[in-house]
Image (cartoon, rainbow over all chains, first blue to last red; front, side, top):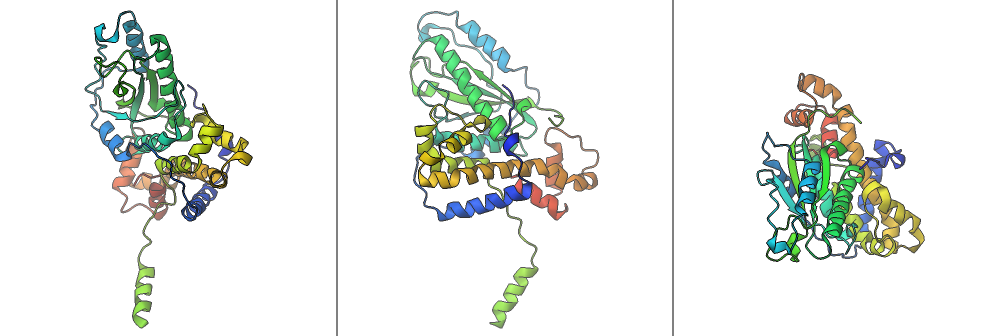
Length: 212
Length: 137
């Protein structure tokens, strides 16, 4: 994933931007606001979930997890009969976030925009500013395994892309991986909604990051 | 009358309470969904927030948008830009304070911001405002 930013549209000075934001807030307060249901994971919950990090995180990477998930696809048969995928991520600080996607698509529905923003706010929070994160997408077992693997990767990438471009989280702090249906949370009910989830893990210190 | 004048005078003498001139990313993104969610589902189906794609799609469909979305989506985008600009400006606004209050602190891992926050009672007003607008305090 590349870190294409909004640089082109970023020409206004800081003062202009601030003035516009203040004006915009006033405008919005005055305007009537139509109700649109939003599903929201609050910022404080995300910060808390991701804060209790251990300093010596074992080498967890998107690449390593992808390899394990792909290897897991060799086990055939119904999901209930497959051995569990042992990812050993339990010791990492983590949070499950509720993100709604369009059916069979990597499009994040607007109802989850606020949560995407809250994830970004959490990653910009001083408590978490020094850490790297792994965004993990999972599907349920409806559809083929190969399709689920591809879709979950696209969804994880969509989240990472929003975080690193629109919300300016340094791309060196974010990795994204889709595990398809290989890491079901509820193996007894492989089509259950609980399996469709986005997890974020704190994978340790970022170290010095020279300006991009 | 005289009393209220005194109160007003006293209030004017108080140091300005630092209030953020920017809003959080969650707030801006939530407002975008609130004002433009239906238009996004109608005109930008399959498009995502990353790389400015939603803003570009809304701008391209400006004439078809509901009035409330048409009137507000650009200013909502500017709210996100303002927060991003404020976060980028902190190191410049706080450069002297960093040298004075955080000598020897290694850059990276959020160390500088953490140090500035610990020193926030003594840092310059510009730096303090910078930290506030960045959403760091």
